[in-house]
View 1 (spheres, rainbow, N blue to C red):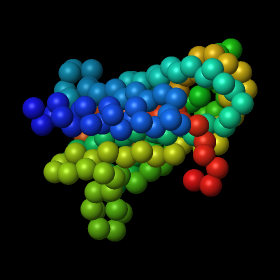
View 2: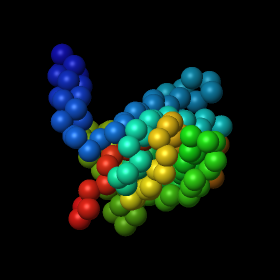
View 3: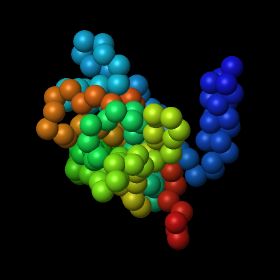
View 4: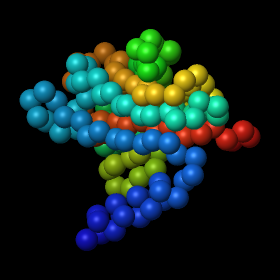
Length: 162
């Protein structure tokens, strides 16, 4: 029952954000079905519609990890593709999931699960309407990366001064 209430509260909070255009998260598992593993060959792709190309947008990465994640950082390659199939951006992002000095988890969470929202593509221009794609690749030196529960993308209208 608590989980259902938390889910409902989360949905209400995101529904109340008028700047949000898109948000989706995908749970991860290894090719063998082991949960909470981001395999190097698993490249989640997120598709979203831009109906108004006039404003600028911020593209965020959502990362959910467990406390037993073995590294303090996570490297991902983010590829943004436009409606015409052309690659608009391909960037490598390094982010800290734990404090490198203390080992304390960063992000929001309780117990042994932590959520992070990282600004990956700030003030992004989408020059035309249509379906855009963001593909995420884990870029660590490990084929099977345990401790990453889910990844996602959030797109919101850029708000000047934030």
